[in-house]
Length: 215
Ligand code: SF4
Image (tube, rainbow, N blue to C red; front, side, top):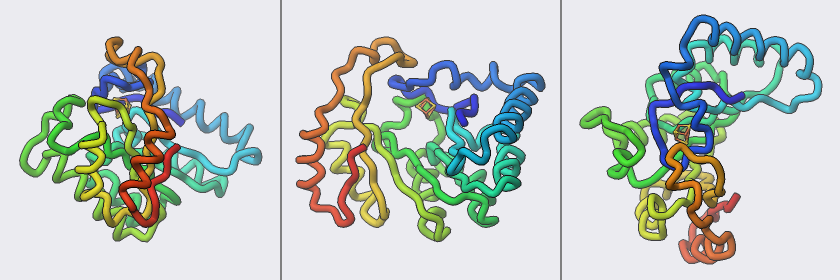
């Protein structure tokens, strides 16, 4: 389920309609999200293997606890996608065992998150928040992965090599080659997608165990 609202502005974002927080917080739209999802689950739960809450940044959605509750009620597993900048919001879900899997994006080097619209500094710097989230995930015992969209010039070989230090202890690091499409910043829509074979060769060169997954 794609939940509206995001605190980042990744230029390559393929969900530009979902990022605006101001357009997504009316009582009507929240009620619509809840009722639409409840109706969907009542019709399709038996056909589903689980539910993914994505975004936007799903942790910003005020009804996320209730939406997860609906999934728990029908006994399906829950996966959460997050950009990893809200460790305080994530922690209660981990503590209470309400998530079965988490995918956290590591979008570029933390010192380049200003290029994604992140303005926090000090305790709210991207580096501090991302490390806190990764530490929470590592301690939680819940299966998780770190995902990086490979999208030069934001993420090139140099950036990946720098991120390798941050992800050294992570059980699963996934590289996702950028896919062309409708983007938040139209200038990024015509970028050439990285070649998957080249990425595999680079990933092998990292010699990481467990190895990097290209997806
Ligand atoms: S790519 Fe994800 S984190 Fe970035 S702006 Fe889009 S929804 Fe937000």
